[in-house]
Image 1 (cartoon, rainbow, N blue to C red):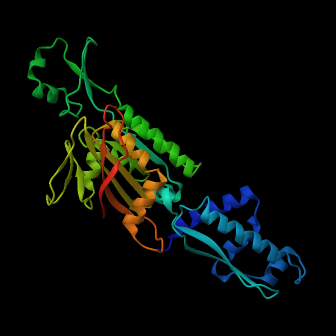
Image 2 (image 1 turned 60 degrees about the vertical axis):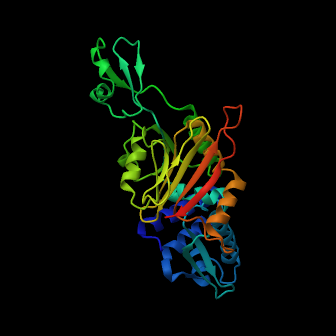
Image 3 (image 1 turned 180 degrees about the vertical axis):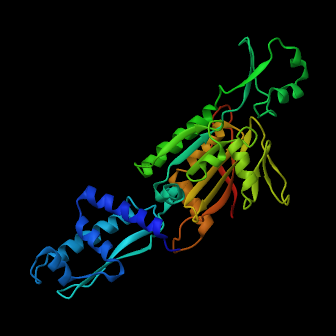
Length: 353
């Protein structure tokens, strides 16, 4: 798919910024962009610079620019879907032109996460902050797993004996899973290792509405039950094959048995990626009913051996074309015997959406 006017402008600006920073042939690049499809001849460059027609400066500068564009396409711009390429013929009758072509997808861990670098959009990472209820004397905090709305009446419906509690209750947010916090830290650190200038913002699930994130890249962690963002994602995304549930993972069409968690022994994690080339936004959802298991999966998604194995399974092609834009991966994470730590997550199955 060719870039539209806005996307082409964003690409040119990204290249120009990099050329200026490295002091590489910026003026020649600007002149070629200005010329558009017409390009520029060797003679025209010499006239522009006030040089003799036999002067080798245009060829030397073109070589510098060509190398700089190739470095940008495979380095800082590796996650941009397109790249700028200098096409030229040598000699005093040479012709120079900038073309925009598809960029070869990056491989490995960088390839897995590359949609989150598209067009340098902000990445919003949301972790779950469940609703608790506090009594007005500040002596009692309650969490009811089936009550995930800011409505005290819902709590009282489930626990009617609390109606007589002096002063009543108010909804509050005071708790986040340490496992999800560690997953958030892991993801943000590894994304910055892949691209130092990536922009990341952290929020909890009650601070941002799902609709607030739609124009940005988003990474959601947590549970269907407690995260309104994950519930809204599953409600609005028609392409999904599997859904995360209160008790594990189920297939939407009911053709498979539900994959049920065994608390204290093992948990199922569902990783969903929706990379939309219409809006150039990426959504990655890591849904799991246990924080430390979530953290274990987040580490696995940045482990070279694990991602290479996944790439081989999902693509199976000698010619690398990149990861699919949209897919789901079902993991199982087992608690290690006599330990509170989780072992290496195991891929149960994957589907391309």
